[in-house]
Length: 449
Ligand code: FDA
Ligand code: NAP
Image: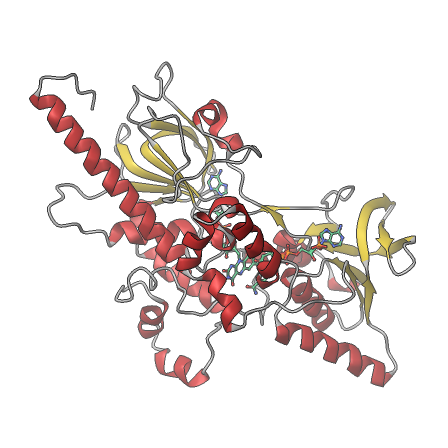
């Protein structure tokens, strides 16, 4: 990482998950002919080391996209950062091919991401939480050629300021809990599952409940059933049983790079149709093999005359009460619509996530960002937030753009192409600005660069 305190970076990434890792590689591979300077960049990540949903790295969990939708291949199939290149470097390429599986485990994909990030480590600052993004004090958007990021250092060395011409925000999904359920040592969100689980003595977990009917819920239910042979596992499922994630070929087209254009330039009806017909490719759905594995376990128990896995269908968690050491979960619904309580030793709320929301980071700067009739950010096709026209700096979003760019916004499917598009946009704007400055200099104008 550069030590230049007053350096103005061309690009500063906020958050360093797969999206901004993919961007860092796209910048690394950007070697334009005739451009004098490479694009300087810095990525700020609050975690102490790289980690991609570590608390859900369950032993047999597999990826939900093909390994070919890695960090780079859809942008640059010849990249040395591809999943195939990683397999080759790890000496496992022949075995991977023999295995004939498009979907590696999440553990293996995590190794791949760690391998890739190590190769761009000189521009990542871990343990760095971005608190705010602002214009320099006293400067209007038309005057300033950079933004100021206030960064808190997790190592306790205090705060610092980072300057950027463009900021790419990619801070990820935000865990969502049911109303009336607060997280504590017995009430967990799926995003903190392994960390909280490992703090417990498994013998204390005799009755556990998992709320939700998405992939996280099903994977955690399977994990708890297998890891706690003495325990009863209750799945609180809002539907009448898990529904399958549609990953059949035609439906899968909604994740193609071309679908972003169809969504972005489509009418309101087009966008509605994407959600109406294809929400079940991702939300509140579970992979076929996980569903079948859980049903098999329940059936085998029935044959043996035990009932360790209980499905409470058509139920939602409506609140949680702590009474002494007991955790009482209030459930609402069921075929009779009744309210009932369930006493558990731990409740896991696999109740999903809210979209990325950068408003708190932007503070006053948010006033320069344009919103639509529903109060959502207007976002250009190149993922730059639409701003007042005199704003010279760029604020780009990787995530939080489902309303403008569609289903891939929070997923991995499109990160390679999206990162390439963001780099292209930043380069094009820089080239235009340089040309403008040259003209102004020639006519003796006042160039504030
Ligand atoms: P991601 O959430 O990964 O990274 C954001 C980063 O920003 C984090 O590292 C966070 O610490 C950091 N951060 C947040 N605020 C910050 C701040 N203020 N300052 C500095 N750093 C900050 N999708 C898919 O297509 N295929 C799949 O197989 C899966 N699998 C999957 C498993 C699980 C368990 C979950 C929960 C989700 C998935 N997903 C998925 C969807 C998931 O959103 C996607 O895989 C990526 O995590 C998206 O990458 P991002 O980099 O955008 O966010
Ligand atoms: P999700 O798909 O949004 O599912 C959340 C579930 O919680 C839904 O079934 C929802 O039901 C339910 N729910 C919400 N409030 C509830 C309440 N009060 N009581 C009971 N249930 C409630 O979230 P997710 O499963 O965490 O998945 C999020 C993303 O991560 C998806 O993209 C998924 O594919 C991904 N993921 C991937 C893997 C993997 O790669 N192996 C693993 C886990 C997750 P309603 O719909 O009725 O509200």
